[in-house]
Image (tube, rainbow, N blue to C red; front, side, top):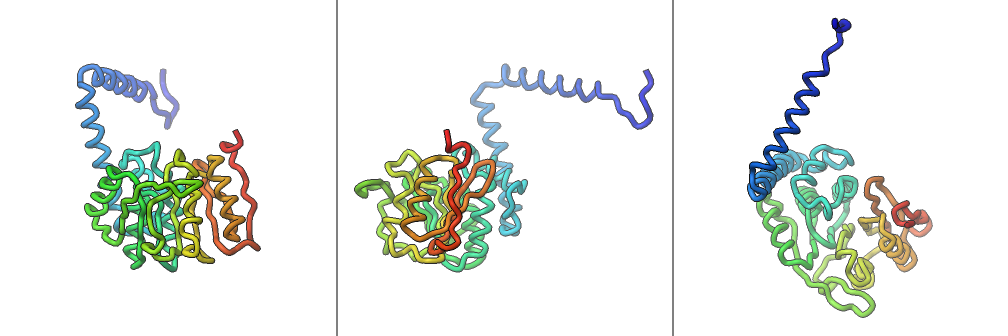
Amino acid sequence: MLLPIGATARRPAFSAIIKMSLIRKIFRIVVPASLRDSARKAYLGWIFRRAMRNFMREPEAHALAGDPVLRDLIRGWGNEDWSALDEYLAACISEVSVSQGPVLECGSGLSTLLAGAVAKKRGLRYTALEHNAEWAERVRQALQQYDINGVELLLRPLADRGEFDWYDVDPNELLEPALVICDGPPGSTRGGRYGLCPVLGDHIKDGCVILLDDAGRTQEIEIARQWQKELNASVETSGTEKPYIRILIGDRQAAIPVALPAAAQL
């Protein structure tokens, strides 16, 4: 049968898809799982190195959700279940790009590398708190590999603070932050991330911005509401794939009521 002018046959493309599917099945049968895992890790490592090279050329240029470099970095980092999604990472990069003072990060990971690179370029002090020694070592090696030497990564276990657990750190060790990137400690921690403001106390000044990840969880919504009351703050949710919360200390008059994302209403 003759095809209309300009039309293309789809059968070869469909055949190619079938062939690739068969090749993948044969590959899984013939190649041992250990070799497949090694090949996958090598491939993800290549993706990450390529994306980091692109990112480091101009870090601030990747402060947009949906940026393909951010997506590749998340994929290559290989910790998709725990890593911040590109919306939150873009927000972190954007806030560090305009921050007027030191940055404190609670928890560490891919965000430490990306936001830390922007902070280094701008000459900002950057401190990250991490409770897991093995994870801290991975992040520290990545910081060294990409010469992001402006980040101070502090290994601090979680300590009993009475009604909650939080990092075992003396507030006097830390500079008064202009920006806090709050993606830790883990949600399973007693009290969650609430301990940030009670522990740091007067170190959290008016004008400080807190980016609180995981706004799809009821616990984070309640923490944001507590901070809103205790710190005279405005609170705003952002993001669609994985919402986060932006909190501005000392801006009660401009406060925006926290709206529970659908995921948190379950």
